[in-house]
Amino acid sequence: MKDIRRFWHQAQDFDPLPTDYESWTAKEKQDFLWNNRILKSQYDELPPLQKIDIPGLFLTLLSLKMDRSSDEAPPKWKKAIHAHGSVAKVKFVPTADTPFTGLFKGADYGLLRLSLTGDPADRGFAPGLALKLFVDGKPSENFSALVSLSGQGENYNFFANELSNIVSEEQSFGPKFINLLFRRVTKFPRHLYLQEFGKIDQKGHQQNKPHYPYRIFLVPNPNVQFAERPPHDFRRDLATIPSGTSLFSVYAVDPGQVGDDVASKAADTIDQPGYRQKAQLIGHIETTSEFVSSFYGDSQLFFRHQRFANK
Image (cartoon, rainbow, N blue to C red; front, top):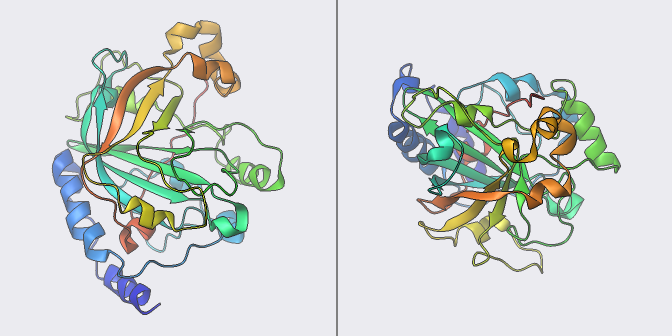
């Protein structure tokens, strides 16, 4: 606890983001957050994983998760879920034939945070990720993905299953309760939108005819795998992944391939198994650093959740 307290005080010494931060290039933003925030607050000793803070989640102003565009959390922000994780610098490497526009055409500067919803000893091992891609002179674009709302039970291999920005409905109490909480701010609590990724490229250029998928699937590299048992800290596993690792293959479905009727009813259809079978490879997420666990990455690095729009 001594190390954790030390980083708490150290984090309080961080000044707010520079007033001209948003005007910087994507590389400058990535470098600043990595070198001056994440590395400077790296844990000497990993804090224990926390249970999901249900009362804290209930009291959280969830609209901030949907509406705040800053890369840094507001003062006194606390993660009630996904409290601890690890962050790496990454890039998105597109396939040559990707049909999508904007950042789907490639992004050289990003941050990827891998985390668990809570202590796996409490509710099972439930992986999640948040991706931030930086844009020259404009706010970053962000999305999150899960294996499922309930996770993967006692399987402690973080990369055992693919993740998606949309997860299926579940009937157990925990997922239903969290869904209910998020319904306060969005009609589709199990869906996150990807439109903004298709509307702008990493140079900050707006796309005349943005084209984006409704759903993507992040398939782990089969060569990056960890033990399923016995219980072990996923952050120590992640720390062994070298820079330059292709971590996820990204698959997506072009709405035009499934017809206007399906696309127009996206919120009702794109969590069906048949949609996954139509997905095509559109790129890879590759690490450009090792993974680091830090106070800043756990408490102040901010990822926006974009509300889903049923087009």
